[in-house]
Amino acid sequence: MASIDHPRGKPRVRWCDPDGTPHARTCSTEKAAREILRAVQHAEDVGRKWVDEGTPQTLTLRAVARAWITACERRLAPRTVTNRAQHLDAFIAWYGKDAEPGLLSRLLLERYWDFVRTVATGRYIHRRTETTARKHIETIHLLWTWAYGREEYEPHVPRPRLMELPRKPAKTPRAAPTWAQMDAAISACGSWRRCALIVMRCTGLRVQQVMGLRWEDLDTATGLLTIRGELGKPGSERTGRIVPVAPALLAEWRAPGLAEWTDKAWIVPCPHTHRLMRARDVALVWTHAGVTASTWKGRPDHAFRAGFQTELAAMGIAREAREYLVGHAQPGQDVSYIEAIRGLQLVSVVAKVPALAVARIERSETA
Image (cartoon, rainbow, N blue to C red; front, top):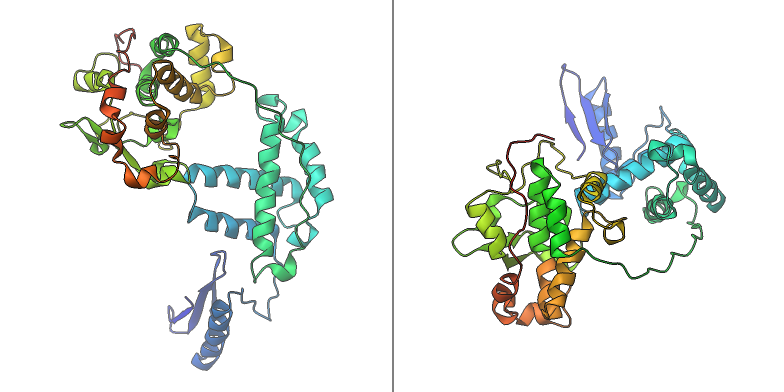
């Protein structure tokens, strides 16, 4: 909202662009400030950026990208927003930080695809996979389409002409780790990561859900754990849910012996403010444990989720119960009409999760 203040006795008009960029202009008279204020407020009302005629500005793709990321922050998970911002930073660094959005074209995206797929652009001097390159291009597609649909950018952005991406390779059946293999990986892991793997093994939760759990989410009297909607992926998981905790995990939390649950707020202690557990660190754990790579390669943390579901399925647990525990959408209107814990007999289901056959940790580690 545009406004007028008087920081040094003279009227100053303050306003922000639609992308949040702040501006200010000091005037010599109150009348001039009021005229500028009316012009800025009119631009705000119609959803456009006000440009001072005395200082014409050129719209850059960088500014458009910043506005889109701000819009994404209102509805997407922080990790998703971070990934998209990183993709756009890489594209703008290649495209040019002062380049205009009017130069966007399908040919430009095809050239960028070739650039992204070169060995020199990947992390650690490794060639980016086709899947990673696809994510970069898809992020640019989303930005381009969003910008074209915005009134303030439409005159500056050409009609989206999206790049035709290679077909996704067909998925082949994957092996999943057993309880014993997951326990072997946990035994090979130390420090705070061991806590995360134990929770993943006993709940089937996604790694970032596990990293976001707080002790206040756990009702120790009833053994129920609240999975807050903010921790899940968009869709069915955004509603949140309450699940019973496996006795094997409750026993460890009540009388720790396999890991060090040292944080008073977070269930999984973590020395990093970003609270991320890198996939490559989990891959090293699987390798050190000597577990067959076919069960975890390409999805080192997600393999615990696959192992949890597969082992329950092998025990004959009904699909609806397994799907509810891990947060998948329920068929029809089940989620609206069935009290899950009682109707799906979830307490009996999690009781079948076997005790942890994990080596005790002898000393504190701070990896």
